[in-house]
Image (cartoon, rainbow, N blue to C red; front, side, top):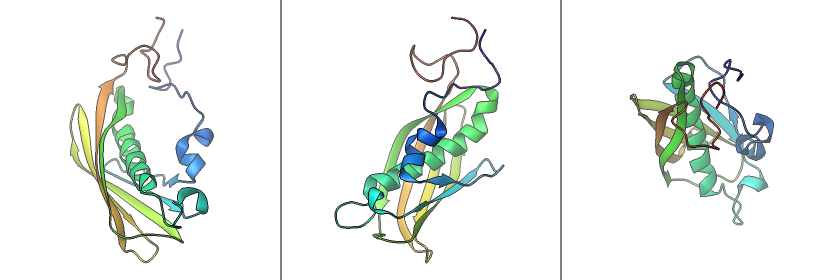
Amino acid sequence: MADDSHPYELRVPLESAFDATIGFVTHETDEIERCSGHLPVRPQVCQPFGIIHGGVYAAIAETLASTGTARGVMAGGGVPLGMANNTSFLRPVGEGTVHGTAVAIHRGRTSWVWDVEMRDDDGRLCATSRVTIAVRRRGEMREGLAFPAAGPT
């Protein structure tokens, strides 16, 4: 019999997942419509010119939007899945910390939409993203994905 205490099954331990690998830290909160986190700048997240790689900004945005959506839908059996990510790079960051804040602008039954801002230590806007997260019900997923239906199959 499956353990129903969690509405999902982790296939990769959190400490081994992508966010931990790049050093991104999501701040804990009970707030559903807002999510934040930070990333220390280090060579492993920079491109050869010594500034944060654009894909890292996109990853920060998707992590915050997915985490925020998860907080809002998982207790009811929802599963958040990244659907679209449009990130614009406005200012290079080569040192310090990138601080990200995501705010939900739409909380629907099948999708959530987030605006994400990433700022440097001086509060200057460095990148901005619009991220859409699909919301699916546990059990709607195809065989072999990380979110199977509860109970025996």
